[in-house]
Image 1 (cartoon, rainbow, N blue to C red):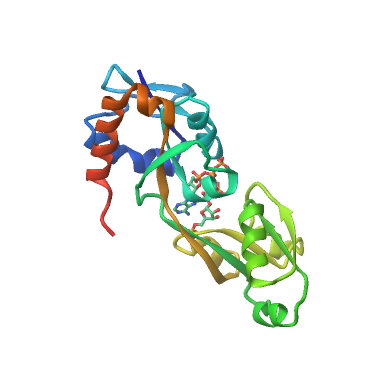
Image 2 (cartoon, rainbow, N blue to C red):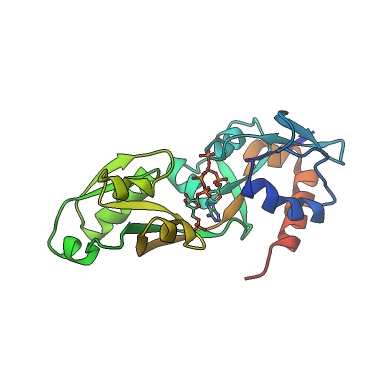
Amino acid sequence: MITLALSKGRIFEETMPLLAAAGIEVTEDPEKSRKLILDTTRPDVRVVLVRASDVPTYVQYGGADLGVTGLDVLLENGNQGMYQPLDLRIAACRLSVAVRNDYDYASAVKQGSRLRVATKYVGLSRDFFASKGVHVDLIKLYGSMELAPLTGLADAIVDLVSTGNTLKANHLVEVERIMDISARLVVNQAALKLKREPIRRIIDAFASAIPSV
Ligand code: ATP
Ligand code: PRP
């Protein structure tokens, strides 16, 4: 049995065409069912649904053989002990710094002010601001980061941006682009040895179906 860990939403949806290229179709709709283990058209392949940030943990410890997860999750939560053969180029976005559109970020940085930054990405933010020599107080949030500058909780946020619509709708502007993000295929190292052939076939099929830039 091959177990693939996915999170509901965009990762699940954007992985479907890659699975189709491997001749695999998920036979249940995760939005219509409470089931966490989904069958596929291949009796030897199943999908398990986990939180986005839990995908690497499942793969690392062998709860799943393979997984699809964002580079943001891998860099923030640790990417040790997993084979990472492919940048799937799906769920593409960027990690950026954003502030209220009336906040003078450039001056605050230039003056050496201590910035309050709210984010889910505390580790990546610490590294980024340290590399710039900017002093920050980091506030950990689990979602709705955009609210933090609007309520006075923080001067800036570090969050994912794709279309920019969420920032715009909340009167925020992107002031720094930290890095480009996309989803990666991760593979349990022991599984790759023990189930080499079927896993190789899935990796090759995914590779052939990666969207072009
Ligand atoms: P959780 O439910 O555990 O809080 P989440 O809400 O971050 O996770 P998703 O929103 O489904 O989960 O995001 C999964 C991954 O998709 C992220 O880790 C990131 O790599 C990517 N992603 C997030 N937001 C966007 C976006 N707006 N556009 C494209 N890709 C995105
Ligand atoms: C992500 C991210 C931003 C939004 C950016 O949230 O945290 O809020 O996408 O996308 P945009 O630039 O295209 O507007 P998501 O949609 O995943 O919602 P979440 O807060 O439930 O994770």
